[in-house]
Image 1 (cartoon, rainbow, N blue to C red):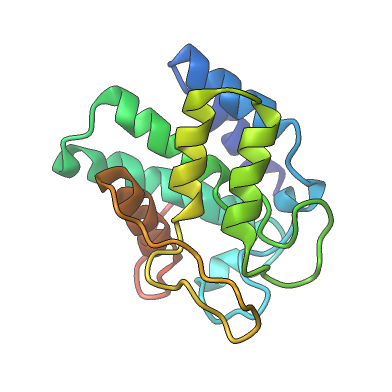
Image 2: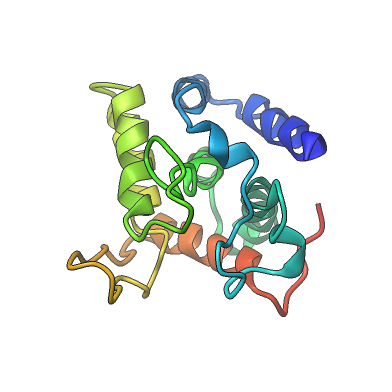
Length: 179
């Protein structure tokens, strides 16, 4: 688990764009502590076995970034666009089990909570709002839940769809992303 923490912070340090780097650092400072220790899935249904123990959510997060790096050339992303997506991916599940404390399960509204965390950690920052929009739509077609009256937004832009795809590929049980 400590190994994944080091890799996570290494990924954060590798963001070259100063404004994106600052947005990431300001937000990481406010991420709930549970993010670094919980599994990627509370039920075990939607993520591979290597992510189902302590530190699994952090491992999943690292996998999404790896997928982004592999797929970026096929999407003709600029360096800036890739870094924008990487920041969103590093933060996309930061509130997966609640905005402040661990509720013990995946919170359906976690994309909204994580997006809010980015904006609240970087007030009046237009680029932070762009990152938040990428996070808000990372669930793709899974916009409803029988446990919630709210509906999440679907990705519409190229970068929103890219972030969703990276998250989706990284969470597949039948596809291995090595870290």
